[in-house]
Length: 490
Length: 95
Image (cartoon, rainbow over all chains, first blue to last red; front, top):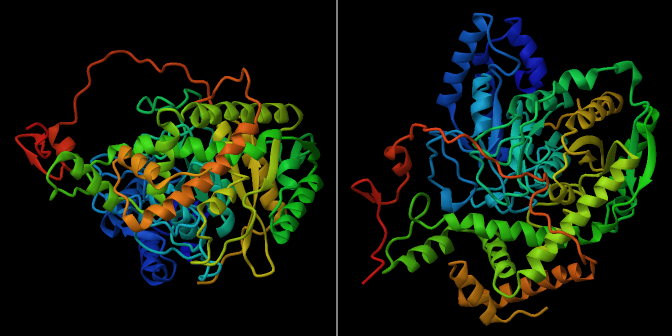
């Protein structure tokens, strides 16, 4: 088996039994990036030196019988997660040359676990977008069809995993930015519960919505990554002091029982939504039947405030972004346009040249929504609607253990053919963004392909801090559906 | 909802952004369309509903007031576009 094609779990087995070394694995991955990534465009930065040094350190640990399940394994990072000494650009001209002086907590945790970082992955600028076409750096292509986009905003993270350019990656999800590209690229992606994973060192987009999460080739790998990155962090006051469950163990507990005794919620507002591609609907309907054949019982549930979710989200997220992105002022780090005459022109010229079109649009919308006289009509109203959306889920979870839907209404589209109308792009997030508003965990698991061979993802949504149920369901589903072994040819 | 060119420029200034003359009309239309869509929120009955700003009902996160070592000025200033005597340099602010 080619080394790059392995899952984390498979590669760990070979490393532990000394069949391969981390250096061999890392060199194979770097040479694959050299030859294949020019077609995909997933990486913004490749850190060969750092990766090989980490691989040698991992081999030394493994030789002594030390190390854990991630020691020596190449993991890619979305380029908005700070890495000490390695450029972190957010795919923006604003941070084109920014080299962080510290590691994000998730990076620290993965380093301690012995993971190897081959590089940083492309994204929509500051995570604002659904196609990765809003990157100021480069185009990323979908490994299943190089004329199509990989989804976004964690498009590089999804494409790198699908294209075997890393064994797993981290993305971030503010309104679907892990789950939608995972769906488009046929990989597993999880947005954890708000507060499950520390955001210290994550460049902030919308602070009440952002979460970091794994993107992997298998559900078991996803559970493994969750065990490694989760947990309370005193440096992120929104992280929650709760013990991290042994997800892999829980996932496989009572294996013979399948999903019997579990109840699946099927929200009418999602399953009867307009504009869903018929092939996507066919794939998720088949997935629903498969869950039933595994012993789960389906019940209809209602999320009556779904119709307001997009509007509420696109008030709250840009409002928070307009505040978060105020820090980019050309004074302390990042781009700085200093040839103007005063401080105001330093601010304005830096921000006007540093931010791309979509980022500016969202900053303006957010600033408008928060400005004097409009706050009650927009931000306050949206925050009240957010309460109603959370209550919808609380009600629904009284009748079911988890909820299923498509992760995205359509498969991946063609590069350059996305609508010029930003509102149309926003509306395509309908199935994913409610989970961010409610703070609940969600994941996308590959569930089939369209006639043209494009992957489709099934979304699972769960109760707060109940990632374990989602992983268990996904693990059983993956084994029964038997499609995770399908890989694109590059 | 219609938003005027003047409103776009006013808000852009609040956000410390310059907007090119040729982009103002397009932005006014796009933002107007987006805000019109936001107006669907008006249909939701939110009488007496408390706003949610965080989904996990966190209360204040307090910690012991313990002295830590500061990572040092060099780390803080490492990315400064311009520095002098251990400080960030900005254009003259007062006359």
